[in-house]
Length: 264
Image (cartoon, rainbow, N blue to C red; front, side, top):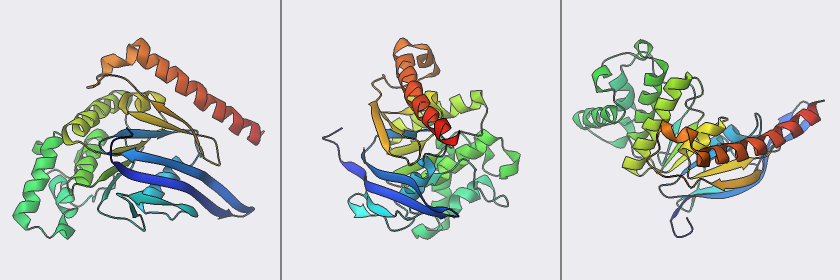
């Protein structure tokens, strides 16, 4: 990807938290670039700082040291250049599906009819046009997450940041959501940074997998995933896929063992 434009640059980022027993280093000296139209996942042990790093990139937390750049401009807080999808759906329960998406467009200076049109376009993108007038509590978990994805995409962010968005879904729904996300990514040339604890999910989705060490989280390894696209569930049983999965599982296990040794 060296000839592609760098959309995101994370440069020597560190994050400390103050605890009852002193300073806790959550992540330390993390540097990487995310290139335009690339799909990259962050994986690692529980507590290694994956979500903390994503929150810093989203502008929801401030790094202790280092810097984060989007299109060479420093991140100083939340911004419309970054769309964020969390594991919890964060939809307004009193608004319909369509109104939830329109709400995200209110600061764009668009008229009501144009907001309605864009919302409909993105509901169609995630296959939920017929549920435009439903309330979130009338939808399944997978459907609510599709609404959250549509809302995050409707204002055309430069980066889509996703923090374990499918973690609460059952296995079959999760696989369908992964396939839907890859189709959207391929069709709309998105740039995605995706946090997951699921190694199989990481391999299936990614161009590259960034593996973090146990806390303090550092970048341990970068694995380029050279598997053909478009990807469907049949890929999961291929020898090439299983090789990537085995390698990453072994590497994460090494970090888990270090964590257990520290806790004993």
